[in-house]
Image (cartoon, rainbow, N blue to C red; front, side, top):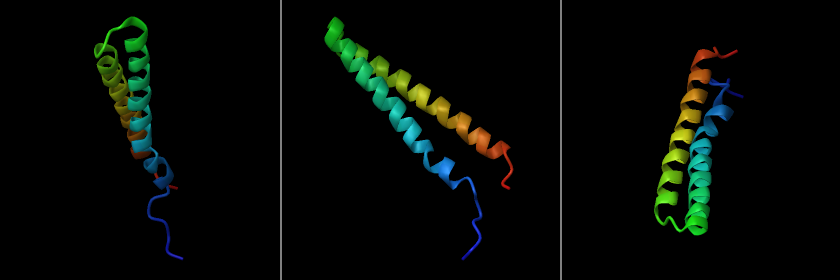
Length: 72
């Protein structure tokens, strides 16, 4: 069996999922705010922007952690 060159593959595979979950939650909360307060489309747009920012922040934090920790 060939040696695994990068033992962090599991962490790296979840990075895209972190961004998608952040955006999805932001949009869902924004749509809920649109219906509750009749803000359409501003709630969804603000939720999308905040979800994207949160997902990207989480992604950059995880990438920096992976790059900082040497493979064992």
